Length: 162
Image 1 (tube, rainbow, N blue to C red):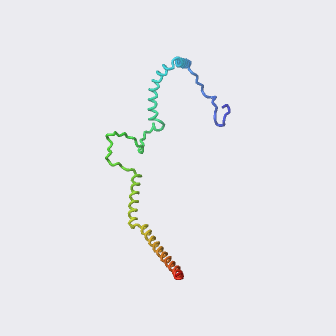
Image 2 (image 1 turned 90 degrees about the vertical axis):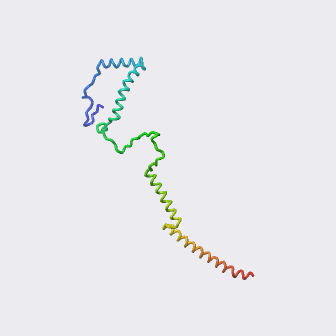
Image 3 (image 1 turned 30 degrees about the horizontal axis):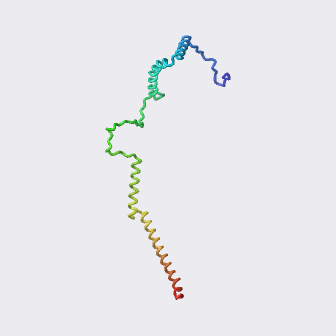
């Protein structure tokens, strides 16, 4: 603390504050009373503290920082409004959120597509059907060739064994 950093001054030049002797006596008496009757002093001081602290809390909540200087209402802030049970109408249709609406639309479009797909009206269904037809033809041709090979191989052998 005694070493001075360049550009900064020490604490030695400051004015000194002395406590008033009457103030010291009052603090000493209050401390002795606290030691003798801890419950009685707390009750009387707590009542005055509660009044002053409640005022301070209200002011500090309302007037903290720049917020106390400029009164601005946030348009995006939604305050919770309590509704009574009697006021709530259960039978009224509830508005869906954006996500819920999008999810329902997605499900409906998927169902519509599947219905058209099963009927063979979509491009993908037509391509699948064409591919299946080609595969069927190839399998039929392969079956015919196998049948001809069986007849060709077994034909001479059967005649020889007889």
